[in-house]
Image 1 (spheres, rainbow, N blue to C red):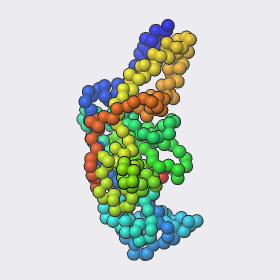
Image 2 (image 1 turned 30 degrees about the vertical axis):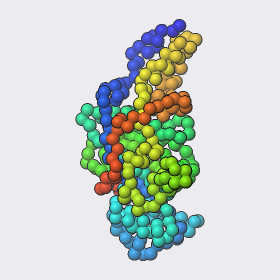
Image 3 (image 1 turned 180 degrees about the vertical axis):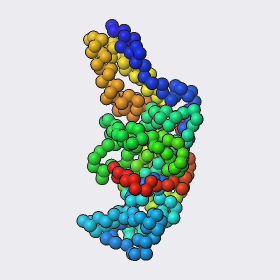
Length: 310
């Protein structure tokens, strides 16, 4: 039998947030981030176009779709006045909202850096009903971000989830770095009724119409689509490495296998442990985080910054 200390000496994984802080509670502020609307008309009235430009700091949020003879409206950080105008256009032209991102920024904590907060989110945030597979990590210029459903065919997505450290919160443009959760809901995940009365149970979905965004409950959104669970990724890693050490044929083989797991296994995400063990029972722990029951308004979009619609 191999001796585990021969493999891991001097290579202890970094301290996780839940080990450094015995009772962490992440408190979030939520706001409407990116919204996409579809209007099945080639143009709108000039007064309506000018009103959109006025509400969007003099810029046009409209993108023409000539092949469909339709319009797509992409708005970052829509405020109540903009949502009221979009709700009017939606009703008048028979349009609909096709995507909505409700972003959650962790409040700064003098005892926990934004990087530790993000690490904590990775270790506890689970996206149920996600197809098993690698999480796509990417460089977002402010650290490493992660996409939970990295499909190239955006149209087939019902929902996605991005997490990363942002340089500031859009709610506090002059504030510190923040850990950022960005749920992205598409099409049917948005338009499905919140309650199916025939079946008498909750279904996926948040809103059917734009005017409902005003009264959206972010905590309800997270309960429907995501879970914060109790899980110790550090202990899971130790158990995995111990099993590798016991089953490998040599120390060198065990080292290679452990290094491979560290590099490609994405062991700091509870989501990837769930992928490995679909029958793993993970207990929801509501006290880990605190989500608000209403949106915060006043988020400031970053001009001239293109946000990928993916």
